[in-house]
Length: 235
Image (cartoon, rainbow, N blue to C red):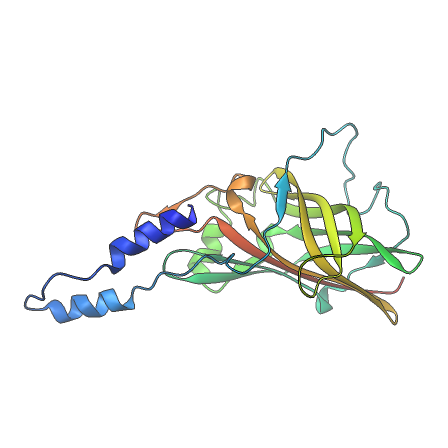
């Protein structure tokens, strides 16, 4: 659903009601409760999404294994880290938390050289139990067929135009069985005995084949905001 479609639908449901008839007070109250949620990607960095180059060799089975990344792998501490998403429909925003994941941040010569993580999709939860169950189905993530999502960086460069970010990361992101090469800003910090990687950016779910539109009177936004904060103690 495009932002314009959302706005058009909002206009239908929030236009001034006709003159009140007996019993119209309740209708006015219901109309007043309907509020259109703005695009979750507003004021957020949108990742650049491209088709990945042709695969000429088998992909590694585990994060970092077989990948040509310089440096030592520092294992992400899940208890200190988080991977979350924020989606929305016309009437509400819904945060999503991914509870089971693993990752690595490679470090060479005092600099981060690679970031990768794998998420077990069936461990996601949202702020609504019914929605959580729906997200697991083929309408959305189809976790039985696509049990994991993963990201593997292919290039990390110093510098970013985004406020508060220190680097630009490019890599392959796979979810719902679709792989795209994405580029986004990130903050990478190498401190006393640990390295941190954090980012927040928007993706269009349609790019990954997640096309369920939602109910006609409560359409789902295409944009989803992904928040990643990884902390890895020294190797």
